[in-house]
Amino acid sequence: MIKLRRNHTTISNPNNPDSACGKSSTSSTNLIIALSVLLGSSLLLLLATSAFFLFYSKYRKSAVVCPAGGVNVMPSFSFKELQEATDEFKDELGRGACSIVYRGALKDGRVVAVKKLDKMAEDADGEFIAEVSSISKTNHKNLMSLLGYCDQGQHRILVYEFMTNGSLATFLFQKSARPNWYTRLQIAFSIARGLCYLHEDCSAPIIHCDIKPQNVLLDESFTPKIADFGLAKLMKPDQTRTITGIRGTRGYVAPEWFRNMAITVKVDVYSFGILLLELLCCRKNYEEDVEDEGEAVLADWAYDCYQQGALDLLVGADEDARNDIKMFEIFVKTAIWCIQEDPTMRPHMKRVMHMLEGSIQVPAPPDPTVFLTY
Image (cartoon, rainbow, N blue to C red; front, side, top):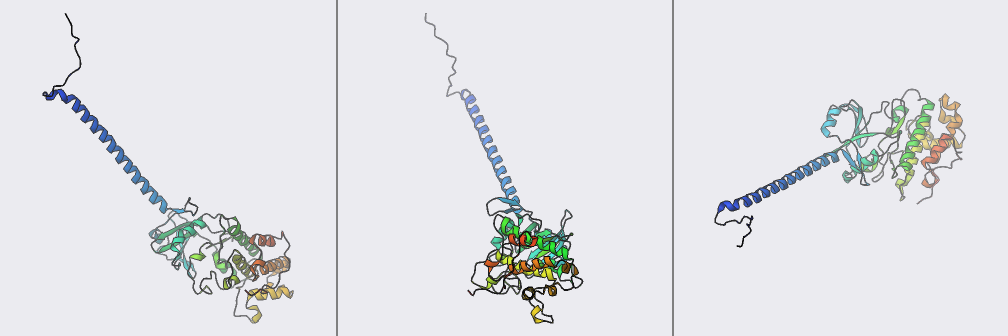
């Protein structure tokens, strides 16, 4: 007798719907689960991507993109925020040809100076963020600290730290007695250090192009800080510029702007020389109301006094400066070297610093107006 082994395999009967139900139901369930997982993952990925772009967009608004490709975090203010901070731009601190500065207070209580740039050149919009980036990356005690900016619609606004004692122009050209001689010496040293940093210690040299007393501000201890560096090329030429294309203010503009010559950091050296003479004499570089016509242009008068051995005329009634006449002479000679019409004759700011500090001897300067015709 032959015994057949029982087959435990279930054979489906196509005519019996219940026989295929188990397998079909299992497959459908697996498919639904797979689709649910897939859709859930896609939705999660979509949400994550959306969140990332939302964050990136918001972050980018509050960051300055550096030319090198990095990101330098710099607070970005809306125009409305700055309107509120300045009480609708109510308290004006001062104005220049291309801007107006207002006093303001941020929500954290900090008092700030809010500078509205209202005459930017037509092609400067694309450069604004790059220039803000350059400014934000500087770090020196004699440079103004930029706290934030606004780049919204037509509004280009810079937010600076507030300087208690205003501009060097107000300090120097006040009607009352001359400011302290030793304070003026320290201010001269500090401005030279700040310019030296811009020219030699930044990753890319920055030419200020508009060094003048109005662009040097004083804090509560009369420490000077240079403002507006990196902004000159964003501005339109106007009545304070001598001719189209020249950057700077009449009286402080280096001669090479008028000639077919390269513009270098030496234009700032020239402007510093004029400012240094103003610091020494506590008067503007040009004064029309003087008894002697030879005293109208400060640079010419200073050289004449030096050449004739009559520095006491420059000193005037300043007893402290008169008692420190050797230092006064060093400063005058340094200033004359700085205002040489030939830019190759002017020292770099680092050498100017050494001259002022007395670490190197200052040779007798030549007549600054002796210059080859190009």
